[in-house]
Image 1 (cartoon, rainbow, N blue to C red):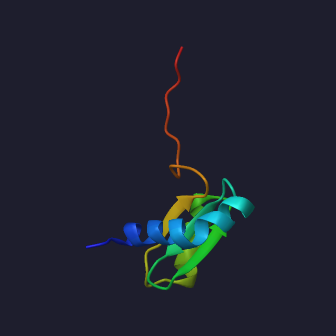
Image 2: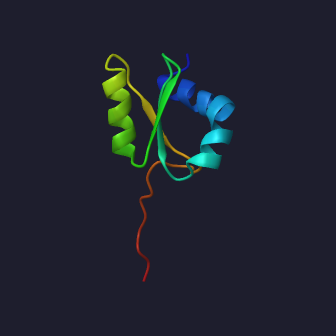
Length: 78
């Protein structure tokens, strides 16, 4: 059974990726797959809050546009 994340990733890949990566590379998109709406903002938190405000009954899935992950967690090497 597909999850909210699966549906949002599919919507990103098939409907949004090309235009968002051209116009908003590096920003974040919160996708509400149930309503097929999306919200682009500079930060993860801003995108998530915009989606929750507009769609309070649904949980958005946030993707960093043009990147493999929304966050980078790394270590410093010496």
